Image (cartoon, rainbow, N blue to C red):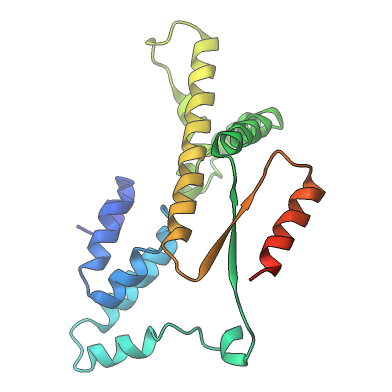
Length: 206
């Protein structure tokens, strides 16, 4: 299989396993990529294919993946710490995600997608993005399984919200696998100023 075949099938997990097969260093990188980060996965595969079979293959891999970014702030003597602001109440956060999806529809997601579709200017990658993908399915669906237009729209909205919530959950799972990140709980029901103040106070304790 090739990366293109995995991408066409939207089989990100299969693509990760494929990249992991090239060795320990590549496996260690691939498992930390956010679900759907095809760009970084492809770049890692390109490196793997470039060095594969060379006499100094392991030396090249070790030189490329030292764990330190060249010119990064830690190498310049700065104390760099990573924080991930996560929802204190996941149910409340899910409600906020749903509200955000509804706002995107209200502010023109359907019209924007329709204009891109009719003009033939929608990029291939955008067609696979959450929001655009569900909107395209809704606009191009000519099945008769759903009885009414209202039911079709409700199904579209449910699919959009569910996909967005899944992605938010995957992001948290991804960052939890990175030991450099410290998770800071945020109460999404507090006013914005209070949320910022509370998170800042927690961060300053580290």
